[in-house]
Length: 312
Image (cartoon, rainbow, N blue to C red; front, side, top):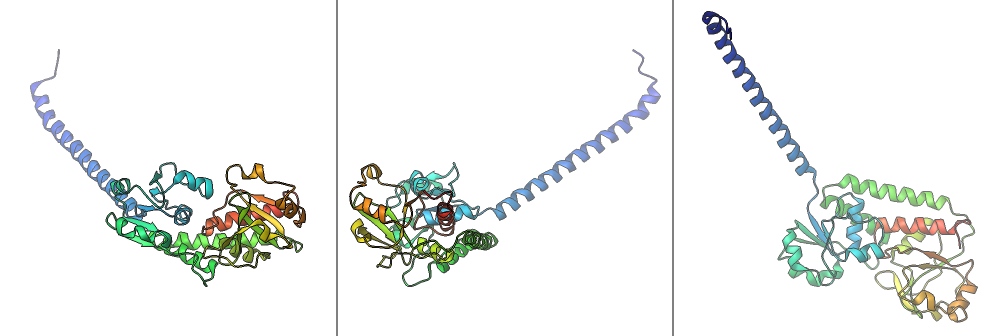
């Protein structure tokens, strides 16, 4: 095969070596630049990622989800979805077992940066502190304004996950939504009696110092229950304690197993239903010990049920 004269080939090889060297340098430079970009992206992602948290408390969990900083692990995930409902935990959330008896070995293996609890679980603090720093965030403090405390809790969590703007946004959007819901109500809503069944004959009746009362206040609605309540805003009473109250009944699910089917319409509950100022309203499960997400959920469900087309 004819390859050209030796003289012309000798001139071409140095040029070819120079071209190869140039291309190699360009590829190396591109690789270095790409690595630098990737490293910067990873650093930026790390800088903006919230800390890895675990919590035993559903109120803290729902608020973290609403702040778009969900905890990596939560106690009793299935029960959370049954009692709290929304906002739902991500599918990847790890279940730590019972809130009062979490799986400490599992928790340690997750290496959380911080463990969040409410004062209700303070007795677990010494054991939890062996795994990670523990932060206890209170809510429903006696003699304090419940709505103000929910705002403070939201801001505290916002600072903890380095998302203060998200906390401010959650507060403002929740309050704006409740103002809008209040505007949908008419002036003829009677006093309400909000209860949740514990068994056939006993209910929690909700009043001062609780989430439901805080929402009723913001909606401009009257609570018919003026009796005493505990630190979480309810009193456990026999249904006979509700007799004679001039109100419309509001029942918050879930019912204990078998209770709804066994309520005797001819008995005392039946008489309360007959005396209710309008058909009793039955709302889906709402976490009565929650914070702003549960407050908005209660307001949404209640106002929708009170509207004529939805009341039943």
